[in-house]
Length: 140
Image (tube, rainbow, N blue to C red; front, side):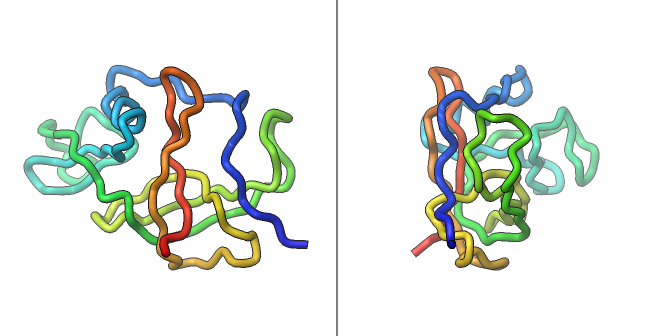
């Protein structure tokens, strides 16, 4: 029996934005996938950091990502860590077209159809007044 990967339901544990990550979460609420980019070496930095992970420089700016990428790796969870998670769900590492990786959830795809390298696009799911989650689904 194949399962379709669904959106997370209300009630799951949500992230707690920090001053450093706030621009990312503000962007998600606005339907924009935001990432830090180093003004010195051009590396995209995610998760948010106080300095560049490429050159260790302090000059980072927030930029919008296209939200398009490919599936780099994934796992399908059948035994949740907490009962608030509905299983199965797919945890995905997405390689964005700008060259950075993001951990997220894969939705709107049957478990048997998930393939490494499949083209993906970001979608946003409002979970609370403060948190909108960036999720990924197959691109047409």
